[in-house]
Image (cartoon, rainbow, N blue to C red; front, top):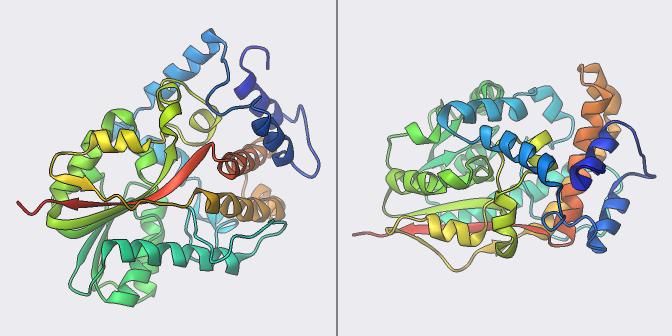
Length: 348
């Protein structure tokens, strides 16, 4: 705690050195509101901060390291993710018809409805049509593809570098009888050579890293036909905090998402190639992430025994609980945001 207050508080919780009733979120919320535990503005002791930052930089998302970073999180096991996600197997921010005032227990149907609405809003941004062939960069467990093809009868190609997701998604597409319309590739997005009518990427940009943002958007442009539309959903750092954030490490980067990095809107706009323009109608949905995370965490806590039966330790369980409640508090008070953003490639 003395060496690094921000990480020290988190790691002390993982080691069972402190507890809170009913859970740690209320304390984290209080600290965030009091500006004691600002996600970005804390003064971090220089020696420990440098060590943690260098650890994070070592995990930057080259093609080789990206697969290791993804494996360390998404390949923890499909059975684990099933215990806290809804039936769509969606691991990103949902959009609720009505924001829940308070989440006190899991509700798979509420979560499923929010995830399906999120996808429909993204499909509207893409102006999806039956004639479209869509590329999805970071396709997860393939819910977007299945939902889109069932609604629009379009073609869909998904990319993943998670072995667990790849196997699960292929079987899921087969079970849905949609193999004629949906293809899933085990492929890094930087190696994709096809040209598509539309491109979708949902909360995958956080696995790109600041240094590779121009590569990411350059690849989107390369894979998008002239006049085509791309849409992303991105977790965002606030512009005013971005320089400090990208030059430091934190609990999420160290313990949850190795190589993880939130871009800012300004960083995104500066990374765009000249032929790709950002539309001015970005939809901010960060306030929907707090209840999404709260629903995940309720299911996580309710399934604690099952998680242990899968072989995961108490330390691991507390780590993910802390991850869920910390992120929920940060979204709740606007320290970070999430947005759906559209881009158009010039016709010339």
